[in-house]
Amino acid sequence: MKSLILGALLGSLAFFPALAADMPVKARPLAPVVYNWSGIYAGANVGVAWDHLRAVDQTAPSGGFFTDLVPAGTEGFDLNKAGIAGGLQLGAQTQWSGFVFGLEATYSLMDLNKTITSPYFPASDTETGKIQHLVTGVARVGYAFDRMMVYAKGGYAGAEVGFKARDNVAGVTYERNLWQNGFALGAGFEYALTNSVTLGVDYTHVDLGTGTSTGPNVLDAGGVGVNPETYDTKAKIDLITARINYRFSIF
Figure 1 (cartoon, rainbow, N blue to C red):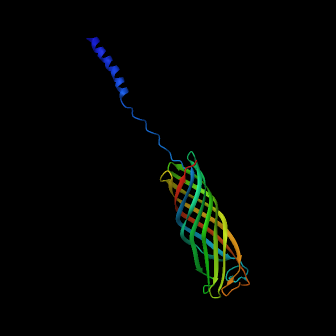
Figure 2 (cartoon, rainbow, N blue to C red; figure 1 turned 45 degrees about the vertical axis):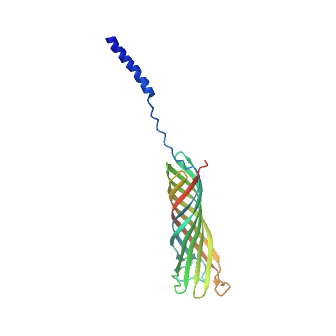
Figure 3 (cartoon, rainbow, N blue to C red; figure 1 turned 90 degrees about the vertical axis):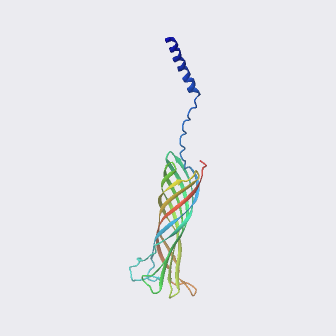
């Protein structure tokens, strides 16, 4: 009897491994795919820009718009303005571990145009400052958290800065547009909506330094005045934009 029971137990033990071998095995979960930011990208942006533009008359007292109400070289006009900005960006970047290194070029068109009444000759004179075109070329360093990346940037900036002084009574205008070079610093973040499309927010501070331009006073009746004008224009710009990029994965 004992031998029969022992034989049955041994037979059942031999049966269960065979049964387990026939059962389906649950597949191991696949490792998550980490987003890679490497590639060339192009896109567009829109947002808000505000400038800090100051023009100072450096002409000796013989200048047509010069005033002796204040010390020489301090006759200044603050022409600060906020407006809409929009543009394009093109860049390339590569990812090493969590770090993302890249280069980016941007072009922005801005509506920064302001006219004020002269505090020195309010009955006749107006002054206008404008910044419309801005380009930057920067290096970027970022850190990626899978599909989100934060970055800082810095490099070159240049913009066309315009200034106009107008005597509406005498019919005389001084106007110059000067390309000024400076630097750009900024930061932002991006999120990969798909494998190719990213959305982001970018902040850029631009310092264009001080530019000096000299030009004639143009008469409405024709010809120019005998006394040219020289103005210094000091300009800074801040921009906050929303961005969309399309990334081409070639790396």
